[in-house]
Image (cartoon, rainbow, N blue to C red; front, side, top):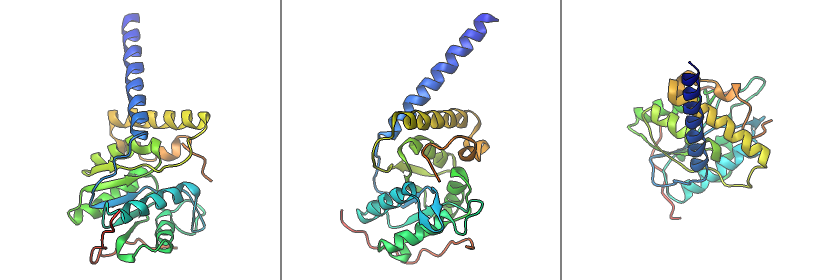
Length: 225
């Protein structure tokens, strides 16, 4: 019995170690390339004003769009308790102030966590025959969001935001959080971990719309980067 416990412990530690290395490696890789749609994962907003984390994702998505990586950006994220608007709507409004055309933007504003937002977006995309997506989130989120997207039938590339490196404690917390989520998700399926974003400590500090799914309209022109 003791040998079995020791062997199981070694396997568990090895599995977590490999997962940690994969999460870390993905956080350092920018796989930006041609796609059919850019998908921005939501983050906090304050009464319609994107938080610094969300603004960084939106700015990066706008840059990818302007460089011609995809003809449309999907902004995602629902409404947290006490909010008057959604992460998706605040992202849409912000990108409009950046000068992006309305026909280049789509909103998913019902998801309460990463899986729900990607699942809803994937459903809309598949209805349009779209599967190739370029995901935008913070670096330590990269491996998990790609895994969720593949579980939902999408073909993902991930281009994480750029910014100042996190402090050592925040880096450890982010890596630990995502390693735990990925390790469990690969074993039982990410869908069963719906809400993990709320149950785990945040990787970085965070502080009446109807569902919107407009017709895409004519594709926006691709700008040369």
